[in-house]
Length: 173
Image (tube, rainbow, N blue to C red):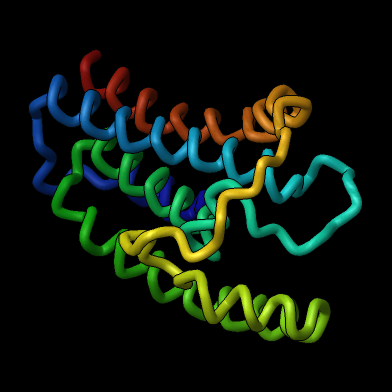
């Protein structure tokens, strides 16, 4: 993500100089991305040093790739905060292309690792668009114990805000 964030921050072509709009809209989209990442981390427990298992709860009930959706929201939010709104569609295309390749690789790995349970899950839960009704029953999984470690493991995402904030500060001087 970092090279794309740096490019958005450096770019000054056709900036939208409506700070209230770009920062509030971009900040809201960014925050939704962070919240989705935390929610997904609470269930998948990635980076929490917990034994891995096939995750089908939380946001994984609605889509197989909530973290990649969250990453895309982070990038779009930063793009808006960088005041280059015209780049947002390109960010979406970039994310779609990159994550399509990543997901195809990961799906093959998960199918080999988990076999029939993963293939059944993949058949019932959409890869990307979580618009249809949840394909799985929501399991009552107590994830409260993972909230604090999940937030802590996602704190690094806030560093992505440094560059658009620096850009805005630099331009206002």
